Image (cartoon, rainbow over all chains, first blue to last red; front, side, top):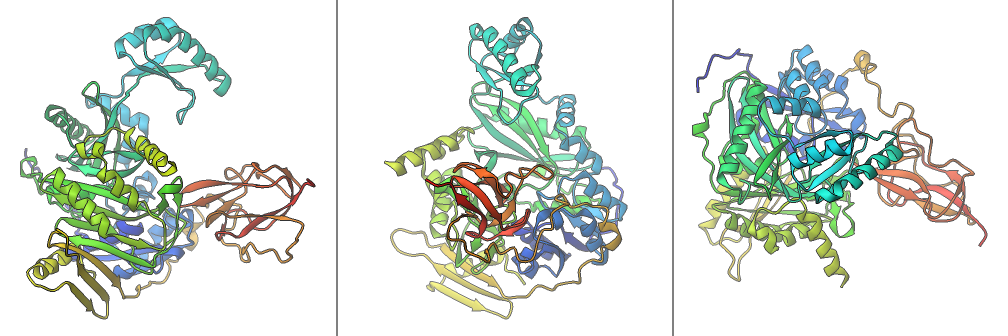
Length: 462
Length: 177
């Protein structure tokens, strides 16, 4: 790999953090270490937050509602100009993948710590992203549109059963039908077309391979606009309604050839885009077929980035800042050594016993575990408030061990030492999952958590 | 100066070699308590940490966003976000009515989306399971049900304003049984 010369920009000495919560605190920590001064924006609800206390300066950005504060592009750009910062770090969520925001930064001569606006567009639009993935040789979920039963039978034979029939105009699971054998296909196609016409006024349907046992595995990549390296896999299969709750790095019990194929595919995709910045290529692993499919790419730092940091030893926020400054990658692929296993539990202000009902409020006590291999990323402390306006994440517990069994045991012990009083959290749910023998084996699929929660309800009711 | 995980780790490495079980440290800017969890076969380096930043935020004046702010239209344009007096307490407690209360603290919406017709207006007939509004808490939309058969007599909290948990959103005059 050759490192060609890169256009140098002026160094970043002062950063505006256009975010809140634990990620704002996380970014401040790296900036402190690098000697970069920090300015954080804060809505009315966050003026006394930990991020506001830790930043060198805080700028009130507007009312509590995110639309009028953390999503207000004009106000944020004005704040950055008046605070005389060199760059804006968008964190995750809010404006992190907003092409207009990246353009507004460029127009105001501020460095956006993230990919280029064109790259945000290429991966932000799912259809465009899929086209790019195809061009880069990444397999999507096999399927296609069909207009009659003959078409459907041919396509279904190519895809292989089981099959999912979806309405083109449908969404969110509505109008979907599973087909498990060729004999069922024709009648179900007729029915699906009739139902689609009745429900959506559009009878068009398409077929897709039904992945009965899928795992959500993603690859962390880092690019400088020319070269790309990957920092291993993460498994995020433990999800509820597409919200990740536990993440691990590396993905456990993934066959090595498949894992290597996925890592190469992610690098190829990022190289195809000449990607600059930190990114994640999300893929769905078909456990029954030992195959993977491209889902989407996230062009930002992820909530679960600390598990990758724990096994690769890099500070990903520092790497983001370096490539945004115009530096070439400081590490070659051969420099990347992954060690041990890491687990992250997302601790949310949710009453997991009552359908995950939100539980904002004031923390009367917040005592976190400490010790070897334990990291807690949080914006909470005793007496702090979880406002009702934003997401429910209160802390991330990240635990590293020399191997997965050690990481699991250490996580269980760490959860037992975690004390959060005053609001309901899902800490106990994490403790129970970590002690579950299915989880202990490693490599559960995305259907695991709903099944686990169901079993807990049954236990509680009996 | 915020203590980092690395700082805590270094302190713990020092403490692991001692026989102390608790360390309390307070400066002008932070407070830190480290406590060792000992006994029953527990490893030596199992600690818990309680820390508090005592610094006050250094607040800069708000950016003067006068001309450019006009370019961005707030998404709920018709709804002032923090209407004064949105306390949800009816000045006259009518004993003949039933209160519909906010089950969670959050932003109260009267319509399913901006620009849509409200779920209910005053004098609308409702049943127990009629959806009369939405409370948005932590990015989740929670439907508010009437909870009684009757007629809406009063709507106390304006659209898109904050409702405290338990505050009265509306009043219903119940149908005679």
